[in-house]
Image (cartoon, rainbow, N blue to C red; front, side):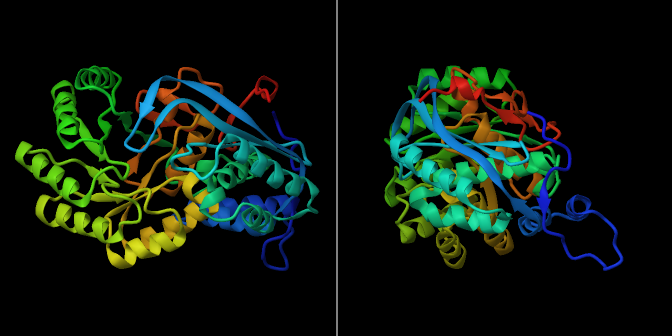
Length: 419
């Protein structure tokens, strides 16, 4: 829905005393300056907004978001038959609406759908009952109700919806709010654990659709994984490969995979989460060997679930790349981890759980705007048999374009999202 023009409450930014700019103009001028300057990892536009925008929530609600998959999605740690997430809608007192999504993947997130709905309801009630306050205060309130990794997915969904509503209020697309570096990304495409023949068919199809990077789920059996990899290469010989073990290998198995790849002359772009998430010594050992002997970068995914984890990875030189997922860290937590990783000189990857274009749109806007990511793994809406999201980003094969004039542009027909 369209937002009423200039019907927002703002706390003035610090400008010269002689400035006659109205409060709304002050906030928009702040964003314009931030967007025109080189964008650091922690966008100045968003940081300024946290200080100046006064949040006044009229309505907020979470509902089940259930969507079938084209085919079962199997990885080393789980098998998913359908998406059972939580959609979040936040409406500000000025009538502007924002949308977010909390993915539910019980093997990865701490919540199942009923628990996620209950947690979202608590946070939404608190937002509706709060007095108008600066955005940074509202975000702190959400974090207090939904703390840590246990509630990170729901926290991300509520944060997305609130930030989207505010971006709609000031008529700024999220990619510009988060830095304005770019308004497009190019994603990889994932092949889950399937037979070699099925993998070959998928790789051939994805080649025809213009995907140049394939993420291959591995981690159950080394011999089978290598057989599937050979089938993918035969069907899409010039693709870039990411191998994602989802914690499935032991250290010795991971090293064995590296040796087999070397014998085949294969150098994947990334070897993601080769060992169990809390095996810090093993992760560091595999990372060092992968890079020093084979020239392969290792990415930490499940091992990075908090800011403390990020510091540990950086200090111990335990990985070369960190996979950022909003559902692991929340939006604010992700921005904090991005800053730590970027300053340390490590690579960044943006990924997701299994989400619709609501969550993927927000993540894509954030990554495009910041401009500091080397890998994009935002393909899961392409694996769904239905697309419940209206509007949002444009899809052309692997290319996502963010041309919406404000927020992330995606929304749901709320009445069709039943309890």
